[in-house]
Amino acid sequence: MIADIDITKKPFNLTAGQAEKVEERLSAMNTEEKVGQVFCPIVNDFEEDKLSAFAGKYMPGGIMYRPGPSKEIRKAIGALQEASPIPLLTAANLESGGNGIVSDGTYYARPMEVGATGDTKYAYRLGVISGREAAAVGCNWSFAPICDPDINFKNPIINVRSFGRNPDRVIANVKEQLKGLSEYGIAAAAKHFPGDGVDDRDQHLLPSVNTLSVEEYDGTYGKIWKEVIESGVLSIMVGHILQPAYTRYFNPEIKDQDIRPATLSPEILQGLLRKKLGFNGMIVTDATPMIGFNAVLPRKQAVPAAIASGCDMILFNKNIDEDYEAVHEALENGTLAMERLDEAVYRILAMKEAMGLFEKKEEGTLVPGPEDMDVISCKEHREWTRECADQAVTLVKSKENILPISPEKTRRVRLYYMEDRTGGAMTDAESAVHSLQVLLEKEGFEVTVYDQNKPDFHEMFEEGVSDLKAKFDLAIYAANYDTASNHVVRRVDFMPLMAADAPWFLNDIPAIFISFANPYHLYDVPMVKTYINAYTPNAETVEAVVEKLVGRSEFKGVSPVDPFCGTFGTDL
View (cartoon, rainbow, N blue to C red):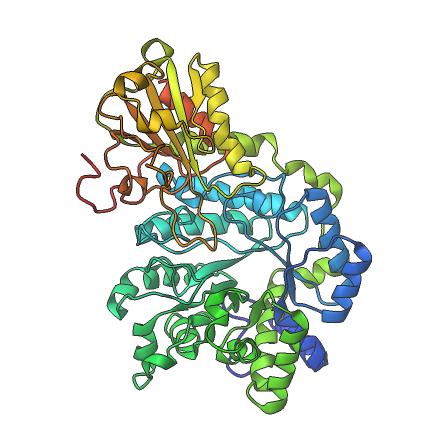
């Protein structure tokens, strides 16, 4: 047994014989192999000879692929596992379904959509769909569930990735998602410890801050993490997030300038996570190319400092050779002790043993056969997706009795697509939302899409209400500001010139605002009288929205957050 680490206890729960095997493997490893184990790079190649060379040179403990075609992902993971003497943790962001690992996988639902159903069976299904489709291509490690409650409506990165604001709701759904994942052999890296979403910034762009007091933290994030750890999760992902109150709790003499993000903080990692919350599993950093990590120390110091502070695995690289060299140099100059590296590798190997990866490698079953690929985007998963959407779509505000709509009442519809205006090819999510036009036309509406790229200057500067009434009977706004990294805000973005696409006319012509992502847009359009939150920009959710607009289906969802943003006037 290494130091005070007992891998026969939760979460590894290894037998004495299994623990002995882990110790034997560790003792047989040289320094190069140990250093390789603490890295999980992101891989982009699909050529087998290149993948074999990569695995042979760097000997990483894990790898991650961004979503790609399922056949290519399966083949690539197989080549990497074949070339790796120690089986790999193969990771994906399985936050919303199988689409987190394969581009042709099921886009089931954002967690907030699941939360809006009020039924945790949909969280279980999120885990099942994600786990079943991931396992089919050899993925075995999920960077999910997300354990952050959505506390700050202005936070640009948590938002619909959370199950909601209430800690008990988050706990219940996280546990069910974990259950679904585990049934298909997928280990989870629950995230983002110590807790994201308190301030209104994104750790991808700077070190963000969880500003809660010790007492406030214990009643929210701490409550969630205690339950998640008790459930037996094998690994936890730590963010580049400061938690000053708990840092000072464990180190009262620390100066403000020395308080570091959790990935570089022994107070948060060893004090809060290990000591107070009792986590004995494997700790992985969030992505280290993030500015929240690199802005704190020179990268040459930061990478080994993360391990020295208590992280067991480094997620992603900038320059992989530089990062490996940084760890070797730190071992040589004593800023990283070999004992600490051994502890990290010990937990990594214990996790792999607990997952049965060594046995699967011997059996040749780390990657299933091609016959298992039939589960990807299968009929059952699509049916579950439709059911979840039907249960989740939420009528937040209805003040003018225009629902249900029909061609008899408001035949001519002007449709406004509100989304990121970055140009380039349309994403799958954008394509799904843009199908709203076709679905409305099938219902008999005459739909005209407002073209933000070619504004009508006559309408902007000269026309009045009577002119617009001659053009359309109803305006529908379809917003898709989806939650994604490296965005400072996720707010409604009207045209800079005269806000020409804003609903200035809504006291004369009715308007419906539908958000397919961020549920807080009433903050920017409080004047809208009919407002719907749909949470997920996928085809099934768009179809569910139309069914409810025309009255064939009732609105069943209940918002898991405050869509009125605690702001006067948004509910009027």
